[in-house]
Image 1 (cartoon, one colour):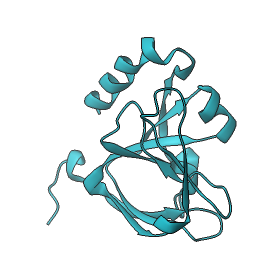
Image 2 (image 1 turned 90 degrees about the horizontal axis):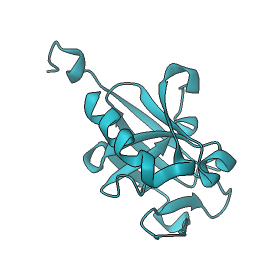
Image 3 (image 1 turned 135 degrees about the vertical axis):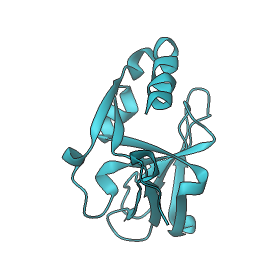
Image 4 (image 1 turned 90 degrees about the vertical axis):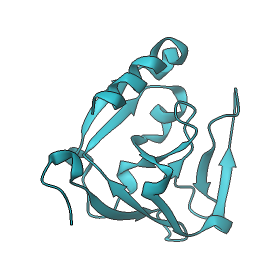
Length: 137
């Protein structure tokens, strides 16, 4: 049974790529996302929702994934090798977590989330403020 506090409220959503080869389930504990202006996120239009490993389950498509890395190679930018959609990845800011693309969640509009603006163009100077914003949620 779920508790009575807002912190205990959650929903389980499914998502994935365009062609359906990659599918996952994610537990959403609040609708607070991140918009990043770095060169990769801005070009992809990625809207971030970062979750604990335990709140993410890849249902199918591990074999369909390709991975792009650059710079420090900490972030693992996964995308479907068939349709090219980046529905989730391992972020450099939280490499022990999974970052889900809000745009790839079924039945959810990006407008259903509130977003923290992360200055990814100045990643080193901004990453601690991103981590702090997550702790306040």
